[in-house]
Length: 72
Image (cartoon, rainbow, N blue to C red; front, side, top):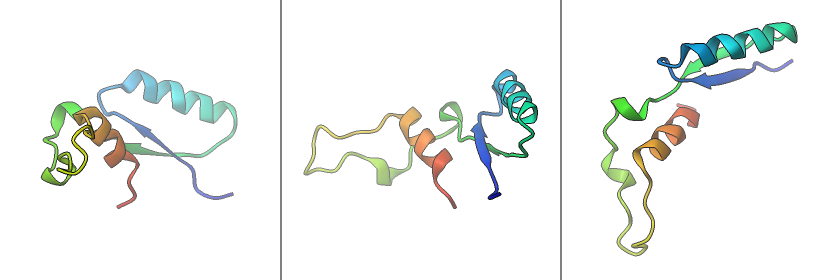
């Protein structure tokens, strides 16, 4: 079986415990990835809206979610 992961904010420990209980009940071994917290980040300049698409923008929360899912 391939490795399995889940993403969880450090400050949301109750979700972490819930998820770990659910995985354990299914006999699954998973690895937790610490999510990027929007409250702790400053959006990088490269996420600024492009001049050619004035209506496009990402919120800090959307950027944090993207960064949490990006494999680095």
